[in-house]
Image 1 (tube, rainbow, N blue to C red):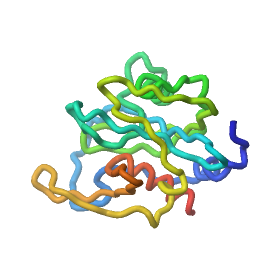
Image 2 (cartoon, rainbow, N blue to C red):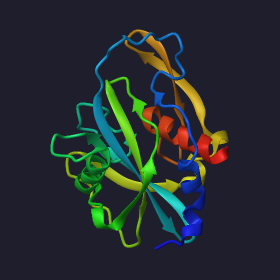
Image 3 (tube, rainbow, N blue to C red):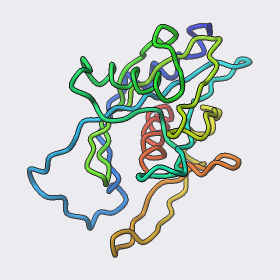
Image 4 (cartoon, rainbow, N blue to C red):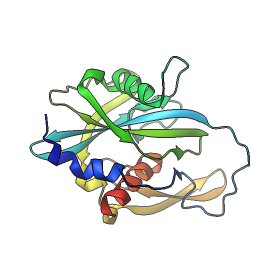
Length: 200
């Protein structure tokens, strides 16, 4: 298990305040309807120590999925009625999707909520993963489980703004590619928020 000093910058970042984010942050012309109902969801942002460096665990969603096939994402999903809270939902989803046992996870805190274009209010749960984790991708849901250096995805200089047509309009979003992995959308925006906190 990593010493506390390695995680100190992450814990310090959690203590800083920042506003909630959304998939519309880079699209100021979008007017969101008042009183819209968002479905609660949670993702786990699992960080592990490897050879003295911190790395973030991510997944590549199955290319056979109806929603967001092949995209890079944190393990997570909607909050079920049986979940005690968003943290419980994130831990449950991580156990189901990547085989991460709850007892090997130490929750560090929550990042601000993120609203997605698909109508979810996602709470990122930042957590430390103890040594010895062997990922087991959920068949049919996850094609790959991999990790990237925390230093890469929390360096504001590595983020780029790109765009594509979506529902007849030009939509702008953050990207933070790493090797063959194209990290973008909500995942990149959540990481961008963490990067801003760690750089402050």
